[in-house]
Image 1: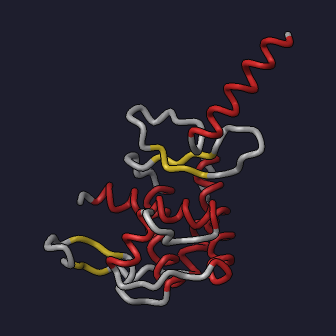
Image 2: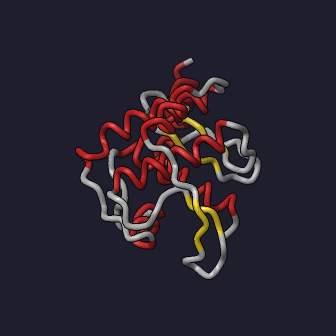
Length: 169
């Protein structure tokens, strides 16, 4: 796995927590990451304070706020524990120790990844859904980084609304 993929997966974890208040639902990248690093799945109530911090940090990054105070707050609350690991046979950088309490592990991992993104890592692009009434974040992994919606439902709902508005005009 490349470092960019690693940062992207951690950013997907940050977005999952920020959008849903959960982490590690079956079939998600977060589920696989938690299992791989011997971290228990946290309860939603445990994640709520971290969820609020992540939403603030993600919002500032998406808005282009160059101060990114939300990321600094995350780093203060969850300082990363950077170290080298070779758990999968390849030496790479980790931001938190395996087996930590879940909120601490997720906080350290996401704080470090969002710090990289806030300072201009060009390979990971964040966005906020452009659909009316949706405030979800997403990681834009499209080829040209022009994604506008968090998913197909919001894109479809917006297209249908625009079509109907044109018909009334």
